[in-house]
Length: 156
Ligand SMILES: [Zn+2]
Image (cartoon, rainbow, N blue to C red; front, side, top):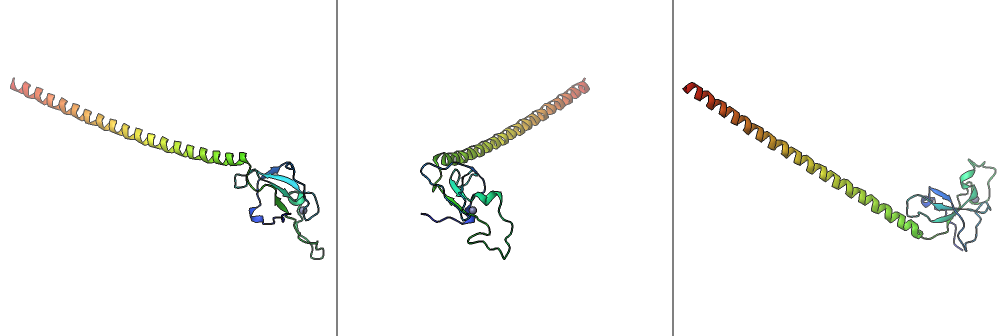
């Protein structure tokens, strides 16, 4: 029989009620109550993994215990939980991979969009510059023609 895991640092934070997997016997926590079965719902290395948790853990943990009423070990707070699964189920592995892939895909898309935008801006700038050059040439031409006309009129 494996030891209950009391390492709170890796106790999952997001969870939902789950059913006891086939072939697994319910266990009792330090309070002596039959444990609840929970399943990790946050996206972590434990997604989808089931574990036993003290039935009193969530609902009604004692706030403080009087020094004169010391319960037998290990409460004050029964923080009993124990992993049922030792690895993530297949769907969770897929889900995590899929999330990662989607994140990368959207990042890629964002990058491509930014690049296209920058290219379009460069294109517009160039078009504007070309237009300016054309306009200047046109104006120069007008000026030259006016000048010629003026000279021609003076000659007459
Ligand atoms: Zn308990």
